[in-house]
Image 1: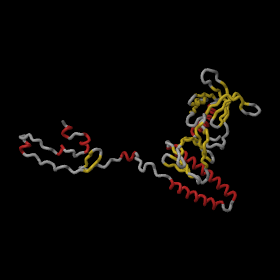
Image 2: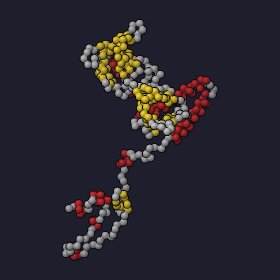
Image 3: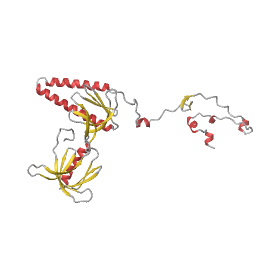
Image 4: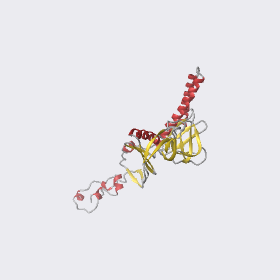
Length: 322
């Protein structure tokens, strides 16, 4: 099975390895075969049919969970439940298997999304897989990370349009618009590109079949289809819902300085209100007052809460210097 889609086959990878025992035991020479997302190992190979015989066990390759590495000619496979150590005949063989397994692990053709209900209904989290002409979805996954319990499918055609928006992808078909959301923005972008590529491949196939069946009018029909697809793309963009947040703050917004408050602005009970000074500043002190002959306290401008920061701190300049 291909790393890109079911039905697109890739040549199987087979070879002999010395498998180390999980706990106590003797290392055994086994014949290994990489089939889809599972490595099967056997006791030997039939000399006539060249097919493996004596199946002993499986090593699942779990997307984004299996870790592969090499140490000389030793191939290391780490799964959540066990570490597998396979000794190859030479480092080149170990590297060849490592590269193939790493491709299976890293290329994502399946993922979890929340499927929005078509009409009035409840949204459900489903596991989706991208195939050549459809996107089936399942209730869960099996032991090797593939879909299990098929519930439905999204059919793809050359007319399908897929657009990312916020944290969701929208697939526009003639019969329905599908909305699949998740919290991983990278997964959203990856899937949008992958579905677009599938639709483009189907569209090119249809155009090729049209040219083969009608050599004289194939080019004209292809141009008309491209124009029609461009119109569908614009129509799909117009159908996208408004952003969840009309204005999202960025790091640049946080670095901007807020405009200063006007001098007469005061803060009261959590709200900002404009307020004129309650009275004019007091007159300058007389000679008697400046000489200290009177014990009358003179109100100074600094006693007034004319600064928002003074009000928030709860102390005037005089109080701060005591």
